[in-house]
Length: 288
Image (cartoon, rainbow, N blue to C red; front, side):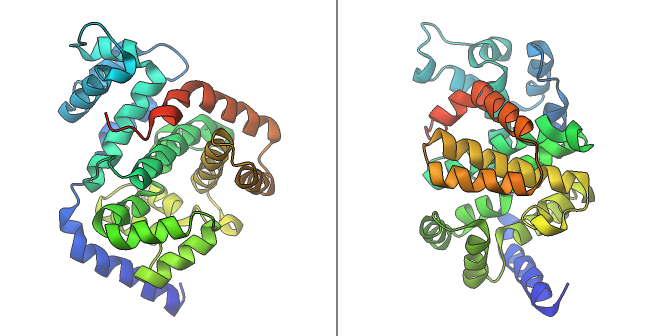
């Protein structure tokens, strides 16, 4: 790391020293367990048992299952029944987005926060889907994909005025341009902040390294680093396509091609994401 890189790393540590006492922490073991549950079969009972170990997840699942969005005639009182209402894909998204929000003390009452959470949940799902293709473990892939933008989420929560202005102004920028803007404003970018946070949460170094390097397309050495980079691009590609942002979608597709991702894998995963996470894309901005 050069002197400039060291200064940015120090800036992220200093900022977190001033704000980190307000961060609740990340429930790594719970998220890893959710990530390891088979997604290709009906596993409601298995997932219900996991949810029952986390009271905040129980409350979140029941709250959303009983929201007006589903239009039920009677209230759902058990986690198992709530999973039937939500479906496996939506239930996983509810759980993982809740874990992510809790980790930084956030709520979804800000559309930029809701967008980051939605993107992170999709990226975690995609990372799990493609992990075996690139010889990475599914549990770590899911967690790393979910946490890859936790630095951005933290800035939105802990420095709302500066971060909201920054991210609104950089919506049309490339990822690198946005990160340069972060450095100009904060002295570090969101990946550097996330790296320091994951160190403090004592997450496995494989996950920390993947989150630290996922924007560095030219220097991806480890399978998990490559998985997180591709998952981020695929998630953005799906979101841009779903929102009819053709030019932005084409840019992300070209990034995936440059990463030598087979077209059949891109199309297959994206089709599965839309099929399984369609509701998440449709109502992610709501505050249940």
